[in-house]
Length: 93
Image (cartoon, rainbow, N blue to C red; front, side):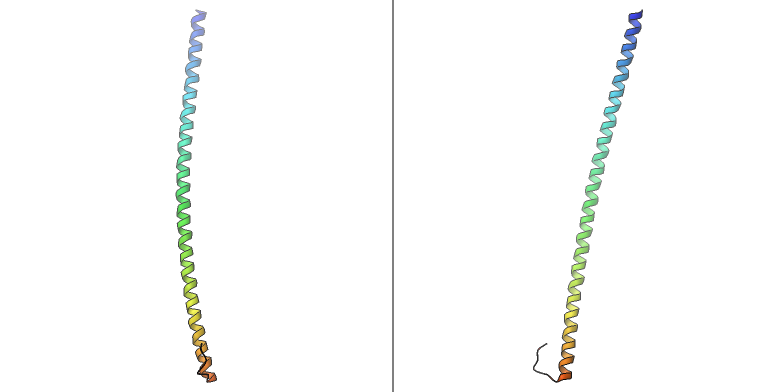
């Protein structure tokens, strides 16, 4: 009878240990899946940020180009006005 009780205890311990290992593996798989999801989300966010930065850089470059054009145009206007005041018709602006 003692042998049978010992065997039942041993069997119970093995079943319990197997359950714990199975749960641990399941948790590890879930954690790994979650890490993959987070990694994919981080990559997507980084790509979106990169796209937004590129878009902002393009807008800034366009704005600077427009400002340079307007500045050159204004400088030419001022040069023409100064030339008229000085009656210097042969000077280039």
